[in-house]
Image (cartoon, rainbow, N blue to C red):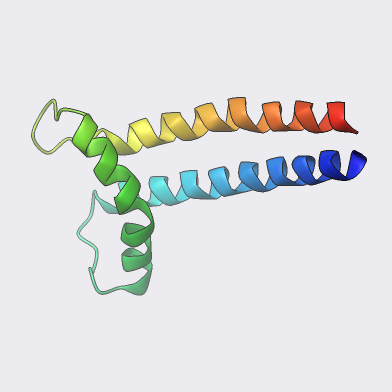
Length: 99
């Protein structure tokens, strides 16, 4: 059973790092929205391709309070923090019990 516990512990750490990396990608995307970046830049295209599917779904759910103000990055940021503080410790506690 310790193998499953170790696997789950490693998986929890990977989820933690992936969530943190995605959080920084969302922050970079939000900062890019304040300037007018070159849309053909590969980094800009990567940031838009990675974040737009999530942000688009949030925009469909949330009403826009004021035109020009996009709250979807804040909602995604809150969801990432929630998952990092709920899902990762839960996986770690299950892993400790299995070891």
